[in-house]
Image 1 (spheres, rainbow, N blue to C red):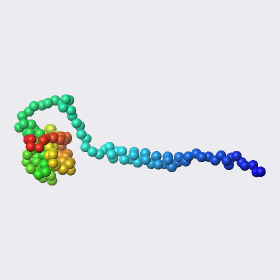
Image 2: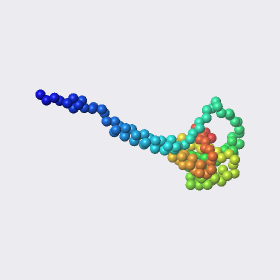
Image 3: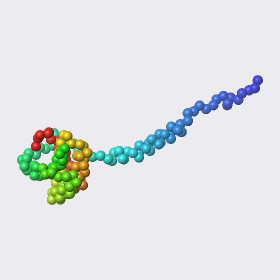
Image 4: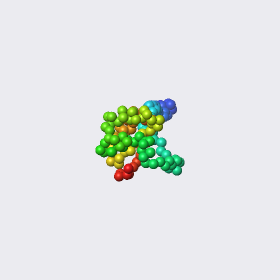
Length: 143
């Protein structure tokens, strides 16, 4: 009877982790490349809480005179109550903001307006020189 070599009986059954390491490394690289694109885009919103803010009481006429308000409704866009086309909004805001120290634009969207229209107005306001934007939520029918 022939003797068998014991080295042939015990073959290595170790798992091959090279494909697993390659896939893991590729996924890490893909995530690292896409994270700046995911985190860098968007609109920064600083929400304030009612208990943390001070209340300033002014008359309605003085408040409307001081604020630069852009109303977005399904019928169109109004700059301080005056109808204006979206194409002309940026130049009108540039003129209005050049004489102001407070470069805040208040955007008042209607309940039934498309989000894309509001974003277009926000882009025009930033292009017109607004340093900050504020969104004002009003109930339908309220002034």
